[in-house]
Length: 549
Image (tube, rainbow, N blue to C red):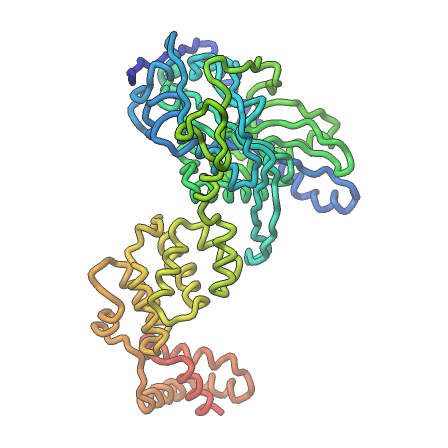
């Protein structure tokens, strides 16, 4: 049963309001000083690397909370829905009313197992739930149900790739180890009302199922961490275990960051909490690495603390001292039995087969993962590896590409250029996704067929693409016919136009005859302008070369 709960008000006193103005003044000074320090660091970084044969380097590990894509919460039947009215999706158990007990959601267990299998984890056939005690106003029970001792999956790995180089055309593949994946419940959400000096609590999110993925400190910079998170996001979306929408809080990242010299033990780490953007994650990590290096090189000490990232200033700021395991007072969850999974036909004694989650059955349901899709695109269609990343990373773009190929005579390498440069450029310009494109795969294929068969030039094709973008109801063939855009094939007419251009640009002709063939491009462009892009540039160049030789 869902109960609508009144929002909890936490009043702030006037002293705190006064101190906020003081803190704002301090933060402006800190921002100024931080920018100067960062600028100085960047300016001297190359010189330090030349002088120091063993420089300080960053070490990064991630803890990622992925909201499980499920209709109901982890331990109650309350619905999971984003942006519902506050406290409208709260059961008695979510609100921690006395006497209520948790009931484990089978869908959440299956999602965690599938995610673990996709990430090469060992699935524990027997795992346990624990209570993690801490007090926040949005945690009504005073503890969180999680899996600290024996989680559902352990010892996995995530392979991800970086695109390097000036043109982003160098693919470097890396792997980060995954320590564990554990099931746990989410907390509620605090809504701060500064105008009334109060905080409101919305418990709609309280009890929503999460997968916490703990990554080992195998990364060294923000770029690597952001690439790993993007790859994980794609995998979760492909599996359907999490929608992974970071803007809606469905994927939240905590970064553990330290610096050390490669031959020395790891340094003291700080934790930057609740980063909800891959781009901000990269910025937060790189800033924190620079900050820690600056502190150590000036003789300071790194504190084991929790920090947050201020995306407006680009700085990490202290929140509190880092809690240790003892601070949380972990204890076994008394209201939940061990989580038992089966494999193959084996069912533990006393367990009913239909009540068991079968690991082998889930393994058979695994879809093709993003890295496999990229490999197939490169092998099957001969496209560049960096183009395969764009096709797979943009939701729906790979399917669009394949649909176009099925209806066109153009080679995949030509199709990829039109889709990635022209279509995707228009989509991003108008802030649309692929599913919202006014140009269907069939329309794109028809346009490319006209180009491939020599009925239109590439210049005209771009004009027709712009016309198609204006909306449905037209097709490429009709636009070409109505606007008289078909290729000028009359050799006599083309020769006359070329001669007219030559006669009016004698200075350029003299330069070409003296050996500067590059100027010929100008004359080709003038002929194309005269024909409104309807002339075959190869044929035009041949005529001009003959007449200016």
